[in-house]
Image 1 (cartoon, rainbow, N blue to C red):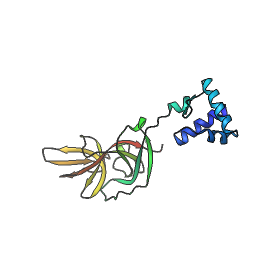
Image 2 (image 1 turned 90 degrees about the vertical axis):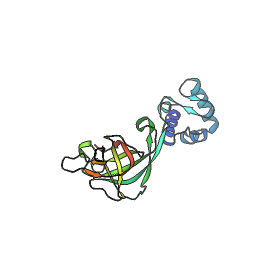
Image 3 (image 1 turned 180 degrees about the vertical axis):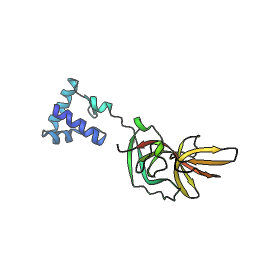
Image 4 (image 1 turned 45 degrees about the vertical axis):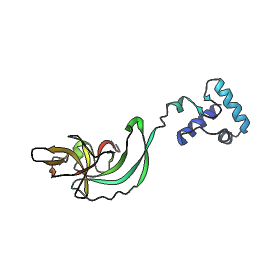
Length: 191
């Protein structure tokens, strides 16, 4: 029974669903009918919950099924603006328990301009797609068909937008207008 329970949990964590009685039988080397009888007995002993279809354990009940499929779309410069074509490298699953719900994309940071904000060259920046930003947000901004990752400020007196690098050795990028592609909300990095 412990071997069956262990298999159920491993299968669930890999495939995000309960294994069939046929899969369980094959995995532990027993007949399908015997696997069913074990599941019923395990349910009666409160080792698992089994309704004839779905199987759950303490471990699988804690697993958050909600995930967002999020594309990694290349890199964004943390320096001078550069032209970047949207090129999806791959999709990754982001658990909503950590990242929340929303429409996201992930960019690989490139350069040194955001190091004082904790964004280093090679970090993955999770960006919520949105076209507006608040003062002080870190944004992916499109300026003259080039994108960049900077802190966003408005200079209302001069009717300018300031894209501020978080690196004392670099200067602000001051523009009349820019298109906000999204706001950075998380950083995924190696430690």
